[in-house]
Image: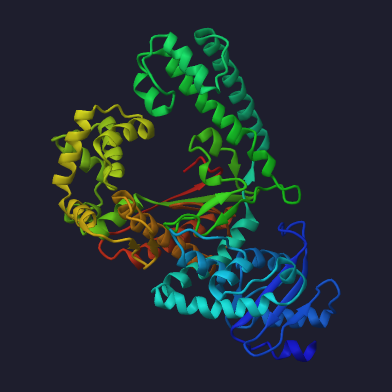
Amino acid sequence: MKDALSQLRNASPLMVNILTTGVDPFTDNIRLIQLAGPSRPVVTINPGNATTQTTELVSEVLKSPGTKVFHNAKLQLKFLRRAGLQVNGALFDTLLAHQLLTAGMASRGEALADLATDYLGERIAGNQLKNSALDIPVIKRLAKGLISDLKEAGLMGTAHLEFECIPPVAEMELNGMLLDLDKWQALSSKLQQEKARLELTLHQELGEINLASPQQLLQALRAKGLAIERTDRATLGPLRKQYRSVKDLELYRRVSKLVQAFAHAIPKHIHPSTGRIHPEYRQIGTATGRFSCRNPNLQQIPRDKAFRGCFIPSPGYKMMIADYSQIELRVAAEMSNDTRMIQAYRKRQDLHRLTAALVMDKPLDQVTKKERQAAKAVNFGLMYAMGSQSLMAYAQNTYGVEMSLQEAETFRGKFFAAYQGLAHWHSQTARSLQRETRTLAGRRRTWQDKPPLTELLNSPVQGSAADILKKALAMLPKELEGTESRINSMVHDEINLEAPVDKAQKAAQILKETMERAGRYYLKKVPVEIDVSIADSWAEK
């Protein structure tokens, strides 16, 4: 064992695979560690039976500067970290490489056996992988083929970005978030009471019907004089001012969703070993390259202060909350080369206020708060070529802005007359027959069939914003050294840390500067702005 491990100290690439008793790094353990160099046999170690000398040699091998190759590196890094084993050197993850190559396309599965079949034409039974060291040679052959495919697709740069993100994402999952359970339970009780009140009110208005039954609701609302065919939000939205029952129903549905999806569900995810919530982040969670989150999905926690105020830093710590200001609009300005948008950002103008002034034909200093809110819907809706009807519904449902169809059509015409670079980008994209898009970092998304224009515009913009945030995440661990900071969570354009009170100011400054540098790495014409808060809860953003 000593000789075999000693020969792996300088191996690069080093194939690494661990077998565990489960998937929870806080309660499960590593059963086997498998290591192999380019031309060396597989070395298998049982940590439970290993001598101190063997454990030290394994640690030295993992700390070596060579590239380490994994399948599902994030999960394995978490277990190794919990076992006190640090992994140095560049990483290569066959799982992420596969996800990059197939972004937007259907995939049979992402297990090692699935990839072996798809890329190598090898059929490997599950019991073979679990009970032997066959997975290491598979990972070795798979990585070789994936590197070739990534190079051919022009995705090596994006792959490196994803691989650099793995360690901070693994740490983020291990760190988790702290929930003020007493405060959350008080909020849950309040929501439950509100739900019961609304349920009673609706039964008085509509009769003793099942409020979750669309058919019973439709009949009850028709009996009230509503000439409708459905009871969905789009149908009922325009009627909420006219009918009290519709307004109460919409509020009931919202409160019911909050109770079911959050109030009751979130506390169940508090880990008994840590007292914290440890969600799972999928790095390439969507075809555009954005993160997704589950168990629980903290990215969907309502922005309402009552909810976010329940997420707090550890005792003696402060929370740092930083997000990119209007990052997707800035990326769209860069990609479309729209002169007016670029100049507005360079002058640090409020683009929502500017758009309001342009589409409503009034001076900037006379734009009201309500008009700016309407312009916000116009900017984010029309950036991706939304039609007038959709814009009207989007403004109402997302921003609470009432907009007639005529107003939506007028705003749409004036918007594209004002932002001609954006209009040209839209028309050029619409005329193309492309079934592939690229972000500013080169990330690819492909379609099997002709994609809708909205997706052709959305994918490179949303993907570029994701690349910028991932670049910041990849840079942060090194920059934050010495601050005792911990990355806690991220939400699309936002990164949250916690740091000791006496180091919070320094950590916040580093976070801001790092996110700015990440933005400048890809945005050459448009400046980025970061809003940072030092807070005692997630609500104090």
